[in-house]
Image (tube, rainbow, N blue to C red):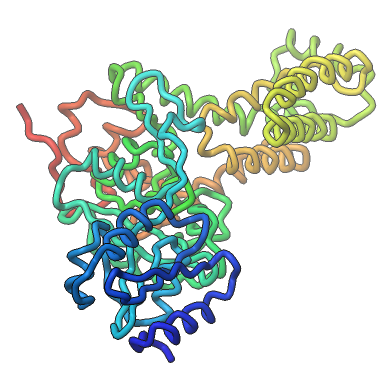
Length: 479
């Protein structure tokens, strides 16, 4: 039996057979005329108070006939959906929506009285801004959709919901603006979402493997954000957004590398300040990746790269160090990574103490004992600070820093130049949904350069980025 028959007892037994877990409960009750009903619900994720107030109480005091239309008019629950398929009814029960069965009716009613556990909307810890909105996404999909709808009050905003995960049945919503987002991008993302077949989808980050063109690439290929204002701004430029139930991190596609050097605060300060901070972020990332590698290459292969006074200082510091420059730098970098992981994973207050102990006690003791040199600790500290100037690229830049260090210790500056050339070639050749990820630098798009590392004033940004191929090019009228 795959559908509701109208026999109350057999329908309830069939539904319970599909859901044998102990937290799936049956709630039988009768009207004053003696007509029996059964509500099937999942304990813990169903609001039992609303189930009693909006469903059971109105029906218990009902004395008339129990036709479907009469029952719907009697119930005060705003969300009522008829359904016959038992498998779909079981899925609704597992989602927290009780199913109402009664004798003689060959369809059931799905009632939307699920209990939603959410935390308060607050500023996300990964993207703190001094100026601008401070709201952040949370783990509830409906709340996140409402945050987007509050900022984009237009009928062109589209939400398409998919259920992904054979076991988890996670709701994933595709967001885009009709008339702005290219239909080819929407169609491609829609097909890829529909084709995902996994057991469990615990977080939105799992989706990136299925949505990007090169899932094994070291480089990032999907935009991420926890702030609704950034999410809406990217959608308004012609991207698609993806929200997943249970995850506060939203995805945006197509992705451009320059996105991560921009900040929402850049649009609330003067263009000069925004340009300075963007260039500063780029400089910090380059220092984080290249400084340890150039230090090792200079010591091993090109001493003339170091000024003579600095060279004498370094020579005095490394005089009795037992390790080679490459091993010394690698050891200090690994120590920094271990301290970083430990401070994140450990309890909050213990982690703060551990970071202070690791930075001061271990570093100072290792330098005094002659195990590592003071310049190595200083360089790794500069590199570690620069790494977090662009938090969204930390995963990629930390691996690139290690790769640069290895080639610098092997073949010197030639290895650094060759690896840099390979990375630039790879970035220039990579596309995602027909959009070059290294735009507007490769290919060079003059108009898009106005909001890249250089930030022009608002009147110069009247058109949407050319690289995204938006259907509606103009976003602001001059004057």
